[in-house]
Length: 515
Image (cartoon, rainbow, N blue to C red; front, side, top):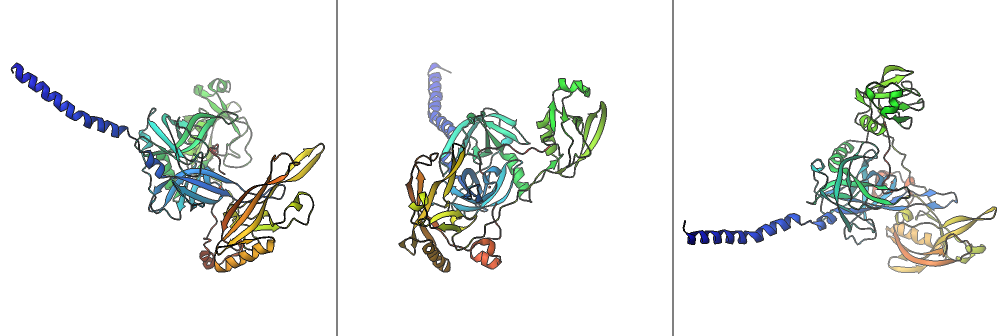
């Protein structure tokens, strides 16, 4: 090849490289591009309203809490979240990204389990909502990029944080091998999706590590999506279930050095039974000061390992415990009992009238109560129209004055107006509110209640005066007490359904221990 041909060949190669360079850059940019909009679009915020309880002052008390979730099916309208987000909830509402309505999309709890902190919700409607794509958490490695989505600061899923996987099987308490990430997870993120670089869901954000005073340490934990899919499959078949040996709270871990004093064979660690179980699977089988060093020929490491080991077995299975009792080696069989204990779901209150709240006239009384000339809301009933509209009652508190406990009004809610069929009516008497509620009930129309909120400038000082803090409108649909309506056809006509939904909503709680 002559020199001229060599030069032409080199220019051709350089030209080809130059022509392919933009394509390579484009492909690289597309690979590095992250579709965060898609992550936000498939995510939802969850608002729960707890059942109403009566506190020591006789006031009706309930809480609204927030969590997150993500839509997994646009056909079945199924949303996945944490169990602790919806645990004991009276009402569950879901807010997709960009939702403009005051009320969210009603959701029903299909099933949930505290063991893995997973819950299945079903939306009444999910038209035009996109569903998430599920990834494969078994393929994750430390250093892989992660994105956590949720609503730590507001009602809609509009917050996203970025980090990496720092551990793929981090056991905290219980049987869950959490994904550990440094992507920021905060209150309100619970139940939200943890995404990978491709925008696929790899876990459900469930927990954080904190200091003793509650400061976030920057380490979050997510239930791996492969485990979630397995748990969801089981939940679709019925209530959760797992084996329990009945040793919770009555065993303590012995290190290998400590176990050596008990002459545990093989230099193994062990568990020592601290008190004799009075009931459950282990009653009559193990006793105080028994030293358990093997379960089904597997050496015991610590109590957390035993929790995971036992939790992998089902109710009715038999485990063989190798133990030392009074210096002698023994073998004891334990038939596992049921580890899942369902909570009793509170039922709707019975109430008079159509609003599910009690109104009183205070203007004829003395002191602070004489200041209010309009009907005062003194009680809200669980699952009544006022409760469903997020109306709360007036509250009392106490302060210490020397040797005396002094009760005082903390805040007051008064009804000052009713909007019915487009017209605003000023309210002066409680009976007037019930009159409009009865009319609305007969016609099936909603009401708007205009409510004033009065509070003290300093809630801790009963000497400060009650001042008008806010005025707001609340939309509600008058109903009779659901507990009084047993006819299935009538319940269906009124949109009450056949059952009462089942909530707290804390960010991240400790998982139940069953070993």
